Length: 247
Image (cartoon, rainbow, N blue to C red; front, side, top):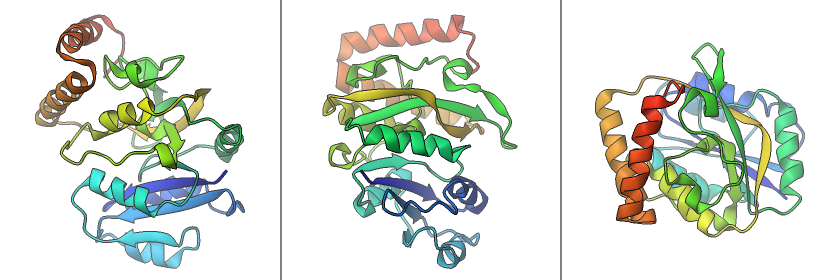
C-alpha cells in the first residue's frame, strides 16, 4: 500500500516546514508520496519547494480557496490512501506514520484516531476529545457526525478511490460534509486508538463562527433530515452548556 500525504499551504512556510519535518530523511519512497498544493504564497514557500528533495509532486499557483486546493491535491495524489496533513498540522514521531502504514496494509477502507491540540509554541493543550465538547467515537461511520464533527480532519485517512471531491460551495465545513459522504462508501473503518496528528489552535472570530455554525446546520440537515437535525442541535446546545470542553 502507498500513502499520499497531501499538504495545503498558503503563506505559511514555517507551518509547512513543521508539517514535513517528520518525513525528512525517511527512505520510504515506495510507501509514501508527499503532495504539496501551495496557493501562490509570497513568503518563500515556492523557493523552499524548489530547493528540497522530499517531494517532486507539488504546485504553487493561485486557487479558489482551501477546499479548491484540497481537490487539486486529490487530483495530484497517486497513492492507494490519502491523508490531508495541511501546513501547520504535524506528526510528532515517525513511529506514528509507521503504525499507520502497517494498519493500511491490513486492507481497511479508512482509519482514524485522536488529535492532540497544541498552541502556537507546540505546547500540548489536551486531546481533541477533552479540549472540545466532541468525543472521538469508538466506532466510526457516516452517522457518527449527527452532533458535529468528532474526528479531526488531519487524523482521518481513506482509500483514494473512496475519497470524493470536496463541495466547494461550503467555505467552512466542507470537511464534515466530505467525511460523511466518504464514509457512506466505507465498510471497514479502523480506530487506531492513538494520537495521529497535532492541530494548532488559533483564533476564530465570532463572525466566522456564526457562519460556520450556519453551514454546519445546513450540512447536517442535508445528510440526516430536518427533525433529526433539530434534535441533534438541541443536544449540541446542551453539550456546550454542560460539557467541560473548552471549545
